[in-house]
Every structure is written in structure tokens, then in C-alpha cells.
Amino acid sequence: MPSDFKSIPLIDISPFLAKCDDPDVAEDGGVREVVRQLDEACREIGFFYVKGHGIPDSLLKEVRDLTRNFFHLPYDEKQKIKMTAVTGFRGYQRVGENITKGIPDMHEAIDCYREVKPGMYGDLGKTLEGSNQWPVNPSNFGLVMEEYISLLTDLARKIMRGIALALGGSPDEFEGDIAGEPFWVMRLIGYPGFSGSGGPRTAENDIGCGAHTDYGLLTLVNQEDDISALQVRNRSGEWIRAVPIPGTFVCNIGDMLKIWSNGLYESTLHQVINASPKYRVSVAYFYEPNFDAAIKPSEFCKEKTGGKEKFEQAVYGKHLVSKVLTNFVM
Ligand SMILES: N=C(N)NCCCC[C@H](N)C(=O)O
Ligand SMILES: O=C(O)CCC(=O)C(=O)O
Ligand SMILES: [Fe+2]
Image 1 (cartoon, helix red, strand yellow):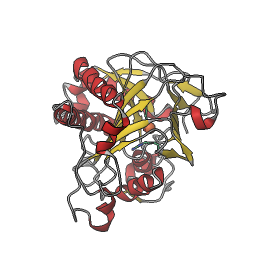
Image 2 (cartoon, rainbow, N blue to C red):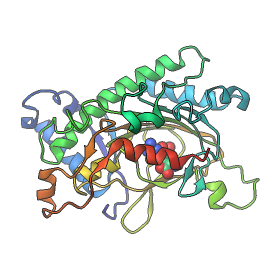
Image 3 (tube, protein in one colour):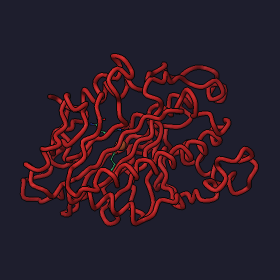
């Protein structure tokens, strides 16, 4: 359960990043302070901002600019990389194609996943087999995105080392069988501005992305600097805004970390409503377990939470595929 938080904390992770791969990482004072802040944010909220993450501001902006420019192209151009079951659900989906709890979301997106080669995970992986579809214009689109993905994969792996320490484990708790071969998902998302001309606002025309939790371990959202649209639900059901803080990522916990920590950390409900007249883009990167990892409450988290398993084991890839298949009707 999240608490009745009213705002989301900002954590400067630079002291931790400097030491996170050292064998004696847990002994450093600066590291311990970052770990304490991570623990508090993950227990009470499931969301936090990070700064001091080392990803240049210029790259964060370039990725958003490429995304925005693509969505501003005519539909004919965008549908050249259309997402279908045949493309392994990779590619472009238009506004209203993604569905959350039965209601079409008011966003368009390009969905990307770590490559899945034919037969790689047997039947489990079939749905997502394929490689990503990048727009051909501008010609560096795919390269920039792949560079970004590789930097974020490394950053997320490091933050997960901090989270492992925050839970009271060893730093490499999530490496090996859990996330030694991390799957990742990335969504380039565009939310049309609210025009006010389509009549009164209803759930059907208002919600950029309906209330949901994320599926994996840790999400890093690169959002627009000047539009506040992402909202996070606290214990009383109030929606607290994750107002943009330029140069930061909004991070949040996914379902697999909730299970692994036996509920010590929560995957918190969130939604997106773009009430501004301006078009909003965001780029959400999801750091996930190994595709075929079976995730269950860890022994030491179980001990800390009364000794009983609160959640059943889940195979990450199965969880993801079941979501993908209900997010789109095709
Ligand atoms: N890979 C992640 N986490 N994607 C989040 C998308 C959330 C919306 C989706 N229709 C849903 O209902 O889950
Ligand atoms: O656009 C955002 O700020 C968040 C998007 C999100 O929650 C998601 O794609 O899972
Ligand atoms: Fe989300």
C-alpha cells in the first residue's frame, strides 16, 4: 500500500553511481544515504525522480524531439511502421488503438522490445518474436534510440543494485536468474492536446493513458519539461501530479518487483491526462526481468513481511504477453 504522500521525492543518485559496482559499495556513507532515500520512496510511494544519473540533457531532449517530429508526420507516413501481430507487436499504433481496462487511450505510440529471435523462448516468446521497426527518416532515428536504450539499460541495472541494497539484500540480487539478461520495453508516446472542441470531456476523450501499473521491475520516464500530465494515486485515492522536473527521470516500481519484495515495494497505479492544449510526448523505458524468469517472493523479503507469501509466482514473459494481447484488439 502506498502512503498518503502528497509529492514525489527527488533523489540525487550521483554518489551511488560512482560506487555502485565496487565490492564494498554498502560501506560508503554517500551510498548509504542514497539507499535510504530509495527505500523510503519505494516503500511509501513506488515513485521517485532521479537526478545525477549521468545521461546528458541533450540526449533526453533529442529522443523527445525525434519522437515528436515523427508523430507530427501524416498518418500515411506513420503507418509504414505499423504495429501488428506479424511484427511481434513492434511499431506504430494510432490514437485509440491501445486499450486500458476496456477504454481506448488517447495516445499514439511506437512500441519497441528487446529483440526476440525465432524459437528463443519457445511458445512463451512467439507473440513478441521480431526486431524493432524504426522510422527511416531521419536516418539516425534507430541509432539514437539504440544508444539511448543501451545507456538506460545500464542506468536501470545500477539503480536496481541500489534497490537491492535498499531491500536489505546483496547488490547483485537482481543479476543472474532474475535479471542477468534483462528484457526491456520502450514506448515512444504522444498525447494530443485537449482541444475543447469535441464537446464535453468524458473518459473516452480525456484519458491519455488509463490507470495501470507497470509490468516489470523499474520504469524510467523521460517526460516533456513544461506539461504536467502524469498522475500517481496515493492511499486515499487522490491523484498526485508527477510535475516535470527538467533533466530528471520519473522512476517507478513494476509488478515483478512488487512480487519479488513480497509487497514491501508497491507497483503504484498511475495515469496520464493531458489537459493542456499542447501536444505532449514522453519516452518510457521499462527495465524488466529475464523474459523467462519465474519471479516469486524472495526468502528475505518474505521474512521481513510476516513470513507468508503474499503473491503467487509469475513468469515475467507470460505476464507481459497477456498484457500485450489485451492492450490491442486486432
Ligand atoms: N509496458 C508497459 N508497462 N506499458 C504500460 C502501458 C499501460 C497501458 C496498457 N494499456 C495497460 O493497460 O497496461
Ligand atoms: O507518459 C507518461 O508520463 C507515463 C506513461 C506510462 O505510464 C506508461 O507508458 O506506462
Ligand atoms: Fe506506466
